[in-house]
Amino acid sequence: MRQQIVAGNWKMNKTLDEGIELTKSILETVEKPRGLVVIAPPFTHLRDVGKMIKVRKHFHLAAQNCHHEQKGAYTGEVSADMIASCGAEFVIIGHSERRQYFKEKNDVLAQKVNVALAKGLRPIFCCGEPLHIREVDTHVGYVAKQLKASLFHLHEEDFRKVVIAYEPIWAIGTGRTASSDQAQEMHHAIRVLVAKKYGKIVANDTTILYGGSCNAQNASELFAQPDVDGGLIGGASLKAEDFATIIAALK
Ligand code: PEP
Image (cartoon, protein in one colour):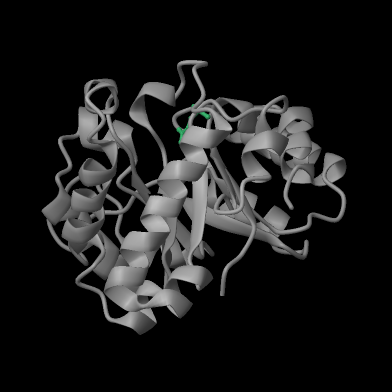
C-alpha cells in the first residue's frame, strides 16, 4: 500500500545518550503524524531507540545498512537478522554514501535487498544520479539501471514491501535541493518504470520518497508533488523541531 513516510537517517551522528535525548525531543515535538515516521539511528542505538518509539503509533525503527550475507565470519558487520532482533522493521539499502565510500555495487545491493526481505525487514532502497549524469540529462536511464539491477528481480509480493528513496547525489548534504519539478519528474519516471515491470496497480501503490537537503523550509513544496510520498531526511532529522516540521508537511 502506498504510504506517506518521513524517515530520519542519523548517519554516524549522536552518542547513545544524545540519541536518546533526540528521540525524547522528537516524541515530545511530533504530534499526530499524517503518515509513518521512521527513525534510522546507528546500529548501537537501535534497541534503546526502538524501545522508546514502539509505544507510539506511527513510529517505526530502521537500520542504516545490513550485510549481504545471512551470517558468518564477517568481523565488524551486522546482519539483517540481528537488526530485526533489535526491533527494526526497515533497513536503508544502497544509500549513496554506502555506494561511494564502501564501494557497494548494484549486485551486492540486490543481495542485501534479498536478505532483508527474507528476514522480514522492509528495504528503503536508495537510488539517484551524480551531478555529471544530471548535467548530460541521462538521469532517468541511470536510475532505471539501478532499479533494474537491484530490485526488479523481486516477485511482486516482495517488491510491494520495498520503499524507494530517490536521492540525487548532488543534493545530499550539500544544501542544494532538487526543485519540486525535478523531484516530480524523476518520481513520475520511477513510477512509470515500476508500472512497466509490475503493472500500474503496483506502481500506484509504491511509496517513493525524496531525499537530498530536504528541510523544514522546502518539505511542503516537495511533498505536495503528486508522486512524492514523503522524504528520507539526513541533516534535518538531527533537530527535533525541524524534523517535526518536515513530518507536519506530509500530505
Ligand atoms: C540522506 O542522507 O539520505 C540525506 C538525504 O541527507 P541530507 O538530508 O542531509 O541531504
